[in-house]
Length: 199
Image (tube, rainbow, N blue to C red; front, side, top):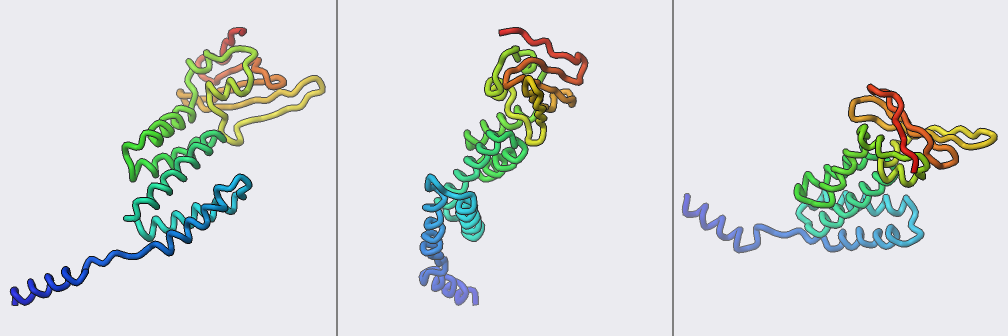
């Protein structure tokens, strides 16, 4: 009986018992969506359709190395875009998803570290602010505020804008602009006002 079983197993292996699945037609279909998604005038819907079809393909064929690589690239690009918009928590989710499959991915590791760093601001960063900084310069130092953490007031003589951040000591910091130029900052921690040096 054992000899018969061994012969049977050999026959299965020799006849191609480990059959590979032909995914070429489905992969071509996924790539056909890529053309619309990467064109200069691509709509968010076209980009989403491509990402969704690629995600479905990777879920169905996890051993397809090229599909995994392309999907990882999309996740990294999306995480970077989310960080640029100040959506650091969402970006962190995508960076961690990449790292789950590729623990040494340098771009994901760096992006994750930067996003985590931008979630809160330290007193040292607040002290590095200078009166007269532009919003772009402040965003470069502190990161953009989380969506919904800004306020804008139009006055007859100027426009006042406030950006709020979580601090490392679990408080909140406020950074204030007059017509796009930094004029004050405060934090509800030990010292309320943040002394700003002039440029």
